[in-house]
Image (cartoon, rainbow, N blue to C red; front, side, top):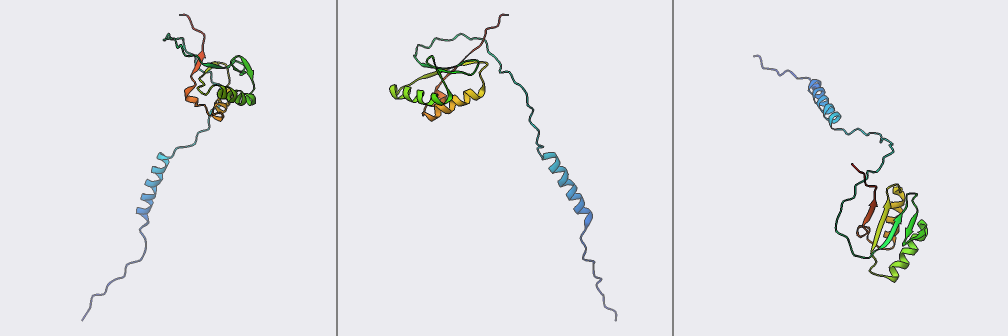
Length: 141
């Protein structure tokens, strides 16, 4: 009598479907990867704006101004970056309801503006409550 004998299967892994899956994953990751781009170093001119008429503000504010050569003035007195903090602190101590206005020349450096924001923050003045007035030359059509 003959009994049925099972033939043993080889214990190998099917390689072809794995290659297909790896190819699909590779394509997916290549498509969805955000490649790092080197930043361009460009000299950017800040755009200017023409004057738009609005209602006059009758509120009296102390003036913090920056010239085109990035010199800082507080109520007409020239300040350095280090003396600005002490001058603002004295002004705030003499007037707790201090309101400032920032007059900024369009040629002033952004670093000077960042230094002013640091000084305002150091003295506990909210930067968002200091409106910036940017003077630009009105172009004629």
